[in-house]
Image (cartoon, rainbow, N blue to C red; front, side):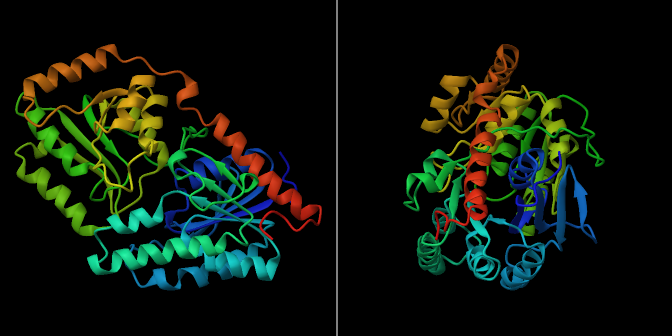
Length: 388
């Protein structure tokens, strides 16, 4: 489909990879399929811009969360984004609100803020910041977000629990969940999987996201019958990656452990292949205030790809499981290895894939496009737009 010249969009992110699960594979590809000219500026090891699945990727050299480059990123991203001269800019981090304001002033473009997380709650729970800094920094971020409401043209929220914490009028905010959107074209990257059977942990490799808890459960299971554990994802904390590797090495079952990614990004096509090949997934997240009430992306992915998930028995997730039968809440710590094996075998044998209405991107994609169309049409008509 030929792109409409008035529908040019540029996504900006600081820490996320350019080919991020939500930014690239859901939001950007959906726009490209609808006829938009789409750019994504984000971390990518490529030495030059390239096109992938109808999206123009403008790479930025990868760096860690606490690297000095992060302080300069908003200004450097402004320079790159300004050259695109898009009609719509979508920002994916609160630190880019300043960048977005400059773009709005200098290009008269429209601005959407895609809220992946409750950043205030995230900062309060972030162990990589000193304890004394977390509360004032969290307050400052929320104040900055609310100040930007006066000129933002729209906000999309990734979770129902976040919806409208910025107190926007109904016409200016939309829920766009992290439901599943498959990779339609085969990726050139390695999509091989380890020899089955294996248990799988995918996603962010960071404290609180269940990796060490999955290692503990895996070790218990191996005392009964050894089974491979595959951990696949990217982490911003080299020390935590070492913790994962050292824990596996001390377990006595290191021969049954595989780490894919770690300090490098894992292509989404490979994540999907790994899920399809696993016996079950593990999502043993720490239920902290910044996670409570969310439906993690992993839940949708495992449902879509037809594999059960063992998850933390949080009340919201137990209710979600009661509705859609996604897998098995984790059992108490005193549960024996043999009892765990019996429960795991039972849930794998009984598992039936939930219907598409539980996990498919279709409805969220429609809501996302409707918000973008509404905002850009206000540019073409010459109206001041909802955020003016």
